[in-house]
Length: 422
Image (cartoon, rainbow, N blue to C red; front, side, top):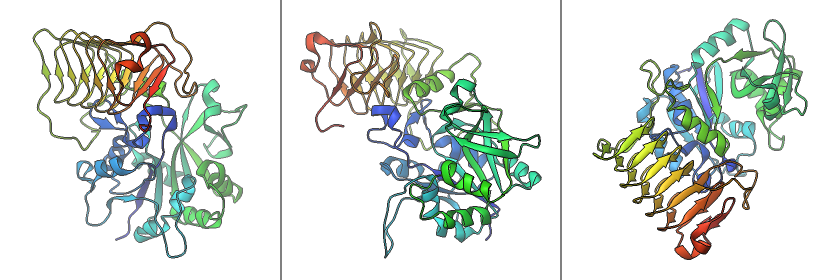
C-alpha cells in the first residue's frame, strides 16, 4: 500500500552539551515537562498531522528510547502497515557501519523507505520541543511545486551563526543556503525539518553515498540546489526550542509554568502523547506549599515547591524547599534540604539538610562549554549524602559519600564523578 508521506525521525544523537543528563541515555529520551520525553513531541506531531508511518533512527545508547517507543501504542502508531519502526544501524553481508552524518543515516535505510514508495519523505530531528502541523507544510510544498521544502524560522541576528541560514526571493524560493556562517546575511534559520519529493531525495542520497559524514545541511541541500531543484522556505511562526544545552533545557521547562505558558501542553486539539508508567494520583501534604509548578502523578509533596517541574514518583520531604528546579522521575529530596536552580535526572536521592545552588557563579572545572549556567546538574541514580552544601554551576554523578565533600562542601564550578560511573 503506497503512502503519500512517511517520516524519518533522526534520534541517534548523544546530546553531549547536556552533560551528565545524557551520560547513559540518548538526548531524545531525556525527560521533559514532568511526564514526557523529548522525542514525544515530534512523534505526537506526526500522528496529529495524519502521518502514520514513522522510521525512528537510533544509535547512541538506544535501549531506553527503544523501550519508550515500543510498538508505538501511545501515539496510535501500532499499525499493520506502517506505524513506528525503530531503525538502528545494522550489518550486511559486505559491511556494517555506524550512521555517520544525518543523510548517511537516511541513506542506510533506503530499503525501508522503498517498501512504502512514498510520494514525499519528511525528515525530522528527535530533539526539539515544538508543535507543528506537517500537513500544512506538505500543502505548501505542493502549492509551490517544490522538490524540497525547508522549515525555517526567524531568529535573532546575533544567534543566526549557530544555524544553517537561507536567503530567499520574493516567492520564498531559496536562493542561497549557508551552514553556520560566521557573518550571516539572513536571520531565517533552518529548523532541520525537510520535506523531499521522494525521487529527488533518493537520487541525492545515492549520488552522495560515498561522501564521508554525509549531512543534509552541508551536502544534500547544496547538491540539490546546485542541480537546480526548486527549494522553498516554509516559515514557521510557533514555539520551537532546541533543548541542546543545559541552559535551554532548563529554560524550556520553566516556560511550561508561566502564568500564560508560551508552550501549552494542555491543548485538546493538539495533544502530546507519551508512554508513561501507571502511577497513583499525586499527593500534596497538609503542610505543603506548591506555587506555579507542574506536579506529575505519583509525586508526594510534604515540603515547599516553587516555580518547578516535578516528575512522576518524586518525594519531597517535610521542611524541604525546591525552587526554580527540574526533578525527573522517582527522585527523593530529604527533610529540610534546599534546592535552588537544580536539575536532577531520574532516580536521584538527595539526603537531609542539603543545600544546593548556593554562593556565587564560578566557571566549571569539568567542562566550561557544557556547564556554563547557574545550575546544579546531577546525573541519574546519583546519591547526595546528608548535611552537604553544593555551589552553583556544579556537577555530580555517582553515589557520593560525605568524604567526597571537603569541609562538607562542593564549591561553585566544582564537580564529583565517581570512578567507573561516567
